[in-house]
Amino acid sequence: MEPNGSPSSLRIGRLTALGSGVIFAGALTYVGLVDPHRPGSLFPVCPFKMLTGWNCPACGGLRMTHDLLHGDIAAAVVDNVFLLVGLPALLAWVLLRWRQGKRVMTTPALVVVAVLAVAWTVARNLPGFPLVPTVLGG
Image 1 (cartoon, rainbow, N blue to C red):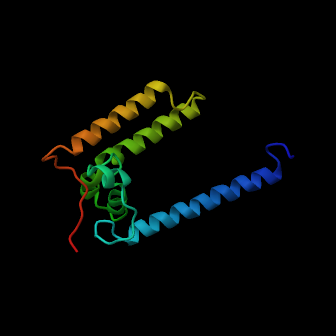
Image 2 (cartoon, one colour):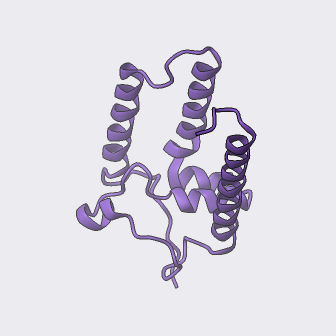
Image 3 (tube, rainbow, N blue to C red):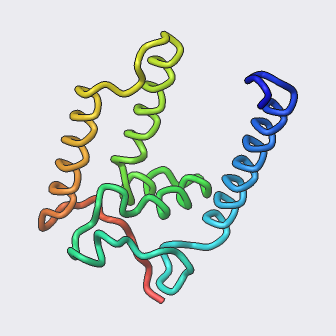
């Protein structure tokens, strides 16, 4: 077995990163080209919504991504402001902790993320709540 940092393991790491980047770019291209706002577009159904009828914390995330790729910030906010603000904030937290050499996700941080996700789920499913994922008619 070769030690870490060997040319073979570095090559595998680079190929993995390249393959992940290609898959991510392909997924973004698909979301940018196929409108998830339209019924019948080929996107997975949210299992939480299918079982409960409620929007989960991530419902509207594909629509939000499509809106961002098309430069429509207002529609992205309506589709899922929680992910729009929360994902970059979480990424900044993780990168900051990682650069400082600290444990990335602590128990208090996980509790905050869970409480925010539950609060967002409840709030967005209240009658009359204005920020719900948009679905366009046929």
